[in-house]
Length: 157
Length: 69
Image (cartoon, rainbow over all chains, first blue to last red; front, side, top):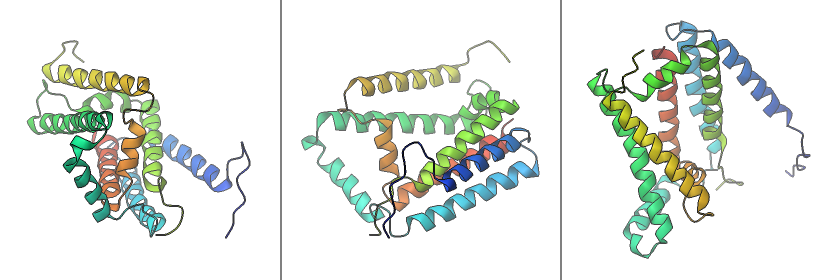
């Protein structure tokens, strides 16, 4: 079915409803404590919904199968000498940064010492205030929405 | 809250500093270096990688909003 292109400056109604719902949810979430059942249920339900919607939206519209994706990565690693130098350097630096953050956070979490604060310790300085908690929750929702819906193939594959 | 900088904080500062330097290099490279947008695209390209990053998102949300102050 052919859909007319959206007019510039006009947000489609479903997106506007989603954005307003997200803001309302974040405002409500801002005043909850981490121990409240409301916080637990809302986060748990949102995570389950995110996976469900990702499956629905992505059915037949994922760019690569997992096997194709893995094969492309293996090929890149095997042929790194013939790849462009900036791309190889980028892959190395991104890997070191991402693995470094995850590994250091895990080490700090496992050791549980005041001398090794985790990333969430710093985030806790923001989420202890309603404004910080609400803003961070809105950001978390936005990131989740992007991860669920972005980069889909235009047509089912 | 203590004003003493503990060893773990130094490592976090080093990681944050490295990330800032790298992002600046990406911004100045005029598209030759791979930026954060392309890294996210790489994660979203297959079911497995999308599932992994969604799981990380969910765990992070649970930890930050249900376990941390």
